[in-house]
Amino acid sequence: MTVLRGASVVLRPAVGEDIPALAAIRATPEVRARWSGGDAPPDLEADIAEDLEDPATRCLTIEHRQRIIGMIQWYAEEEPDYRHAGIDLYLDPAVHGKGLGTDAVRTLARHLIDVHDHHRLVIDPAADNAAAIRCYSKAGFRPVGIMRQYERGADGTWHDGLLMDLLATDLVR
View 1 (spheres, rainbow, N blue to C red):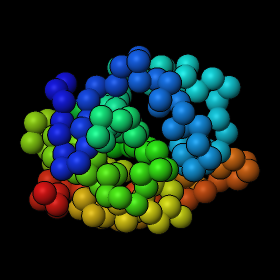
View 2 (view 1 turned 60 degrees about the horizontal axis):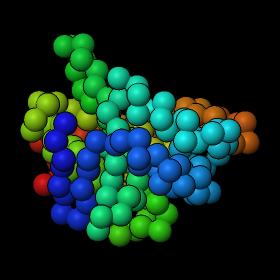
View 3 (view 1 turned 45 degrees about the horizontal axis):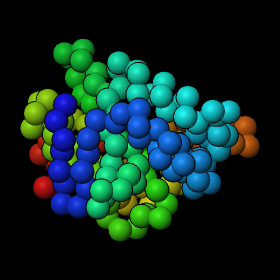
């Protein structure tokens, strides 16, 4: 995969050398609460290395001003009658609220639509993650519905998720 350039971010294939910086971001309380149900795996670096080795998921390091600020990943459902791609990401809390997440999502969405010919993309933030929902909405994602008791939280209880999708015609370029 080639390097993707957004208005402010660069998305490039994640490599082993990125793991310490990505683990540091995943270890922040804000990211840990959303990305791993609040429980940090015993070895975040090993967990990220496993993500990078998963052939079904493409992991891209997000850079801003030549600094690693997070990771965005995508997968594809290739069954012809249900073909679509899904996106997930996390960002360093130090850059939250600056539009960099929207830029990363928009950049990857454009690539998935224009290069991989996906007509539909999905993303599934926690239903109470208003900041993420605003971010994805700015890129053109729309709410589809609540997925009840979708993910287990750090407290062991189940929490709702919001399924959002974006059709190729909805992408805010």
